[in-house]
Length: 194
Image 1 (cartoon, rainbow, N blue to C red):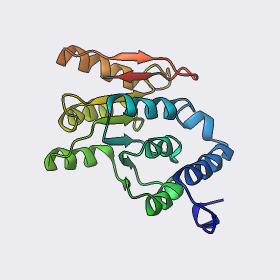
Image 2: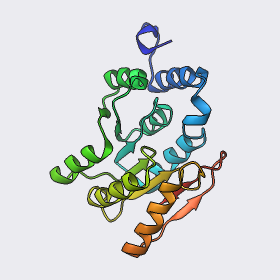
Image 3: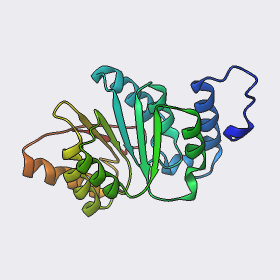
C-alpha cells in the first residue's frame, strides 16, 4: 500500500502513515542488508528528546525507514539523498507532513548551500555515501552547519564493508582534536557520535 491508497475517511495520524511506510519497506528483499538497523530510529528518537533538538538533518534517506522515526519525534526534519527511484514513499510523505522536507541531491551540494545560507541543525544523522573522500568532505562541511551544542551521528562506523567512515572520523579526530563515541548496533555497523 502506498500513501494515496490509505483510507483518509479514518482518523489519519502520523504514526499510521509512518507505520504504513515501514511495513512496505520491510516487505522489500533489500530491506535488511541496506537499511539502518531497526533500533537506530528509536535510538535517534530518544536522542532528539534528550538533547532537545529542534532541527534534524538526515543524510542518506534510502527508502525512509529511519526518516519516519525522525519525523515522529515532532521536530523539523530535512532529509537529503541522491536522485534515485527508491524515494517514492518519502516524496509522498513530504506531501502530508508539514515539518518534513526532502531534497534529491548530493549531500555535498546540499551542505554547501547550508553553509552559504548559514542554515544550522541540532542533530545530523549521516548514512549516505561511505567513500572515504566523500565522508571527509562531508565532515568539513558539517562543521559549518552544526552549532557548538549540536551532535553528529554516523552510521556504519564499525562496518567492515564501509571502512571509509571510521577512517574519515579517525583522521578528523586527529586533525581537529575532537573525540567521538562508538555504539554497537545489532548488525555490527555501529554508530559514531561526535
